[in-house]
Length: 239
Ligand code: 6PG
Image 1 (cartoon, helix red, strand yellow):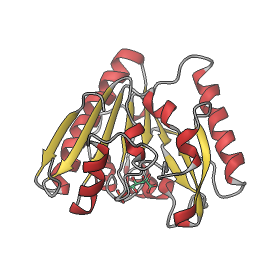
Image 2 (cartoon, helix red, strand yellow):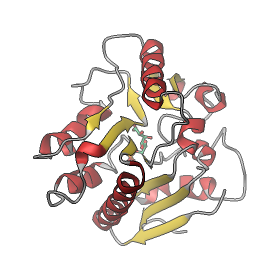
Image 3 (cartoon, protein in one colour):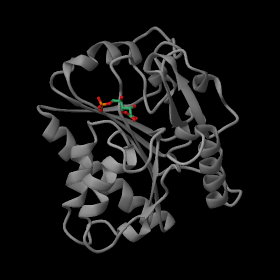
């Protein structure tokens, strides 16, 4: 594991507050330096509070009109389905932003086969990049109890794919297909932050940050960005 920063706070709320301040700093840095900020959002439950806090920022703290929101992964469900990561972000952030709104690049699930949705999303990303390298300024990630991140689950095909940015990944243990960004595009990011709370993540943290290199079993080990890697942890996790 390359060098990384660890920010530990007492509670999940304080983790979300620290991550909010980190997000604001790096979003504004990107906007100043590159005129825009490209973000890959995490799904799951942990980042929801961060998204709510971002929605509550004073007007003008971030010029959202310069922020492009992508998703790091999505479930193969319609955008209004209770399991949709897009729906979670819409409720926690998008619907609550009053004035300037981000440019939203939703993974087009729900009305086409997952493989076609993945290919369409990747095409949109490549068109957006206009042939230039695609570097997310900010990637937010969670960590599953089994050391998965995004929808890069242990012993799944997506872990081995290096020539695609977005794939439909069959996850046998969940009996479902998930859409996920792959390690190469995530690792091209300039700033990556894991938000991890709860003692249930201890095993995964120990494996991912431990000495045994086994990304097939501990997929979050694949995340070694060209930029900076940050871990935001609550106090229930011992590191
Ligand atoms: C998802 C996420 C997934 C999540 C982890 C942790 O779509 O669910 O991308 O990787 O980040 O499973 O989830 P929690 O934050 O809910 O523990």
